Length: 369
Image 1 (cartoon, one colour):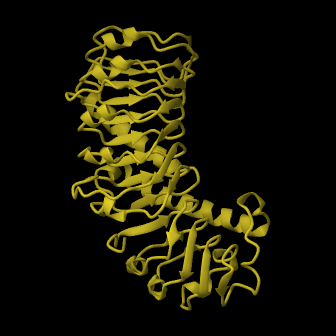
Image 2 (cartoon, helix red, strand yellow; image 1 turned 30 degrees about the vertical axis):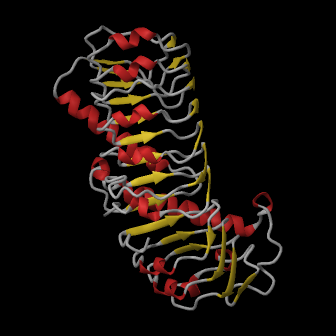
Image 3 (tube, rainbow, N blue to C red; image 1 turned 135 degrees about the horizontal axis):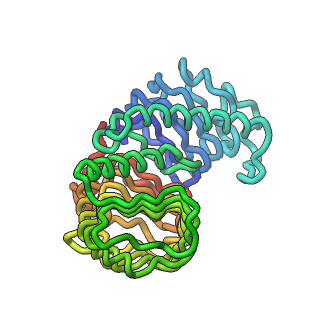
């Protein structure tokens, strides 16, 4: 972990992390936000953390830390909520005697301490959103600020990054003057209308379509961009969509689709972005998705997917953004012996799952500024 010298935000709260805080974290010389709250960490704070002179936000509360709080110019600026709550054996300024006693539940954690934490969290959320958005559509190609997230909250900036990438794909296709149908942001209701078979770009997001996706959508073999986001479409995703070899962007976020993900992705797939955020899909991520060798963005957040960590996604050579937040992934994340795993990964969001044990940082050894 200490090798991530470009890391500026490290947020790992609300997991089941055990053991001690690694001393190697003291090598993260420019880290500015550091949150390990609501875990099962124990032992003393490593002295090496005192070298984090750029640190502006710290939260180690609700662990089992012992010993004395580190002294230093940065650590003297943090209030008691950065340490207190659950850390029964922690002593020294600014923790008051007995402050860490009586570890309370997350639901009972109220009062000014929560207000202060939320204020800081909102500040850093806005700060990083502004910083990351400054890199625009080039962010997913060459990320200068690594954001490694296994935390809580609503990462609005992540949605913005994905939207920027989708926009970039769209602009590239529009320059080639493909056949386009744009029905976005109308008051369309009922069934999904099917455009002419020569259509290559089809936008029909932000309407009120509410029925199942007809299988005839798969007759659009030249289709390269399909955006059905923010409707009320229901039923299962048509499996034949995985057979559309020209399809680069598939966006179905914010619908009422249920069932399983398509299992028909083929080796000739051109898919670069798959966004199924906020649907009701279940079971596991289908292995044939590994055939999508050009995939850069995979957003499967806010579903009912149940599985252990899908390590095989690391074989996707161009995957840069992976969001599996708010699912039912569980168990330990086993380290991989494959040194080429996740070669292009820049952003990963595993928050609100049920992972446990130690986190194998070797999985993301290729993450770089």
